[in-house]
Image 1 (cartoon, rainbow, N blue to C red):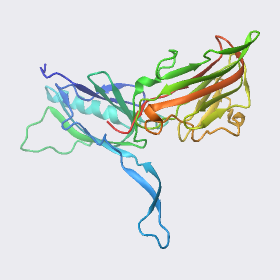
Image 2 (spheres, rainbow, N blue to C red):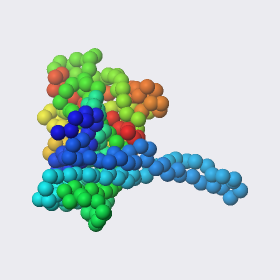
Image 3 (cartoon, helix red, strand yellow):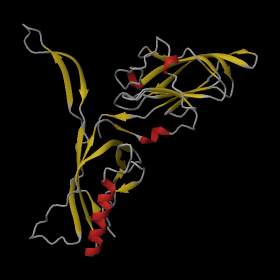
Image 4 (cartoon, rainbow, N blue to C red):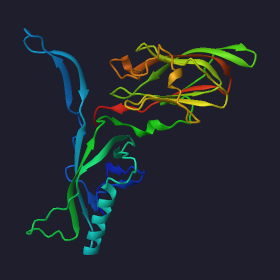
Length: 308
């Protein structure tokens, strides 16, 4: 066994959820680490008038990033060499999902913090011919290139949804209530401190009974509201992920038509510092027809990072 203390870990999580250790500081290593996890390429959107010198900047977009890793895995026999080849091919083959789901490249540091990156296999391993002057008959060494169409990393620990009032989840109702018999109307304010360095598109979950619920990010002046009554026992989920924004209930019904005209479905998000000073997003929620101890409005998110 190696006496080198491992200070970080690198994994590849296949689309079917299996986590594979890429480097153990013993028989598996990544010489040179993993490249291109810093700042992704920024593409500036500009225009230039007919008599203008230079250009005017209007916006920017992050381009997909290509991540390269060089795996060096060694065994103790030629049979082990062939087993390692089969294992690495099995990890990175693209048909581990019938619906083209991405895998995840994961970095874990000694303090327990994690950063994940959604990515697809671009090429490798191809197992090129080795150096005839170097004896490596028991080792597998090759390069794998992954492409992240979403170039922003995230902390997967933020996906916990069953703990109330933790940092990564804000649950309403919160006092005060206006009591109307067993039902109530709520109008509450709370702050979300967002720790990431890139904007996040959260998921909102509404648990009935709720009449005309609304959530507003006061800091950004953006809201999501319903012209709809969510009955008791029903849950409505608003997924704000770009490219797939959906509004569905737990029966699979599409409720997009019930989103209010004032809603900012395309732009509703959490922002990082300095756009939201200190990462603090002031939130406001209201609804009527609420039942204490039953009704909820949950805001779920992942802390996202421009690089690592």
